[in-house]
Image 1: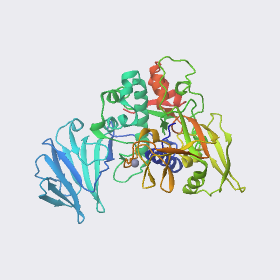
Image 2: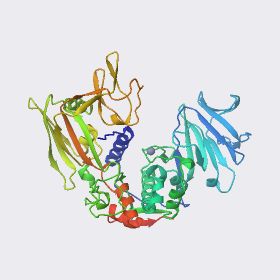
Image 3: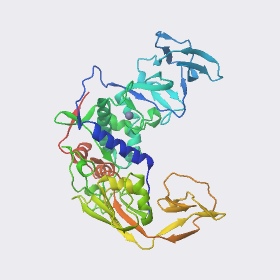
Image 4: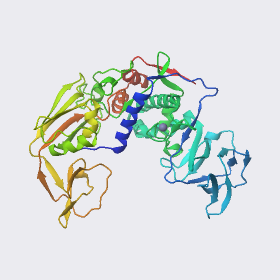
Length: 467
Ligand SMILES: [Zn+2]
């Protein structure tokens, strides 16, 4: 049994929901004076200072005076000090204090072929283009300035596995390139940030700079240069996800509003049963999943998400589903008559399920695993058998999350105890709207072009070339 709940993933979902309610379904394709357009991308840091290295191909300029600082290439530390930016060398000697902003200017006429380093960046190390460092209150902000295509070179490898290109997936990478470019311009048009266009986190798209670039993703971008998805001439919001489990979905069955460029149809290229009998079909790791939820933890899960506690649970039923099989309503019935209904994606989020495409059954005797016990107190451990299991830790039961680590105090699972539980069996990973990355991969392996792939997942859209 496998069960994983990624914190980052639910964060992305929340953000996508937020976008959905706050922002329009389309964006006006912008007209830029130069192509590809320049984007300003905030680089998130691990600390409050900036550790910056550059070589003689750059000059650090104080933008307040317009004067270059007489600093040779090397490694510097920039810190916020009493409303100014102080530049220190690596020995800690001050090289000056400036009101800012400071601008790291590439001296060559090909600024995107040069790169510098930000050693304490969260998602990357090397970056192309230019850099601006300014103070926002007392917080140092770091913005990478580069053209859109160079930006996407640092985005695409974070969105889809570049190695897929070696196994027949180049057309999937190209489809993802068009989706990522469209999504970048969509976010750009929303003006969700001040002083920069895009951030480098999941809020916009994860951007790892030059450090993330690969040959396959660069090639996918070059072969689709400037191409974006439009519907009646306007840019779309190209939702995508890991796997649809064999059926695509429309947004109104997950959230509320409807969009004209999504449909809900079977997707044999992402159905783990491989109904077409393709001989090189790849089944996504999470095309099928199973998750246990102990009955007596349901109340806690509901209360945590702001619902009332129905008390001791009598039964859990799927009341209604959509044509895709995705669940519309789950009802949790308490012994004393109180009941809670969860609708659409809500149930998935509350229960921590991978997708909305599932069935539920009660299991009289599944197990809770006790990892180890020291002085009578059970401790959680992180080893593969425990991923997704419910683990007793002292007084509480807790689901193990992937990537969590705990001190290892024992040498394996000590014992298990039966509990009354529910078993959810499902298909797919993600909301199911728009492009399934796994489906795109199988389509590519089956010989479909990226244009075929995009027109299946975003029906009625066109590919427009901005530059
Ligand atoms: Zn953002």
